[in-house]
Image (cartoon, rainbow, N blue to C red; front, top):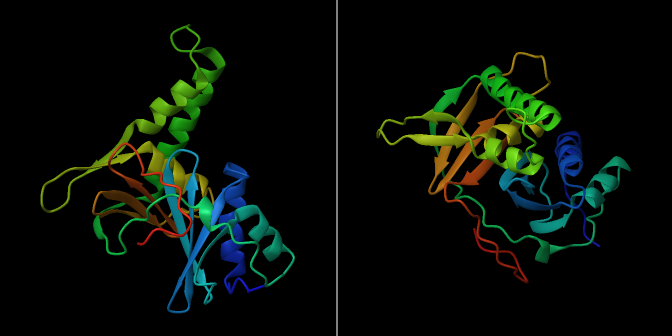
Length: 219
């Protein structure tokens, strides 16, 4: 059995712990290059998240996030059973362009406001009428939280889905601390938020391509 090759165990563990709280059955894809390994995962609201950690890694492998977290918690060095067929999503291109910087405190404010709205409506409905929580959640996630304009003048819309991803994955750092700036980035049809502890990406088209494969897609 091969090893996982991760040296940045605390960083990887923090990523996996957040991920498994949001989706206990989530797969995580490890992709290695130049002595570092990027952990990739898909959140339940159609956003890809990634964090790069130290270590040569296993090359390119998908495993169950919960199983890898258990190995790291036990100070183990083996790679859990490979589950490459579980990864069905394309990744954004490696080259991206920074569009604009956004204060981390502003992203935290946007994330907290949306969460507060969801709690309020779930508890009392909307204008006195009962509303399905999932419908409200989806509407809030689809809301355009930010619009930034790059030098070429084409506006870039940043959905609440991305804001929630960087907030709930802990990419902005400890809550209550002075959150460093994050950057809105674009890569082809993808829009992302690059925060101090990770990056969230979403295709600007409505739907991600879902294609079961026996091996990883290229890219």
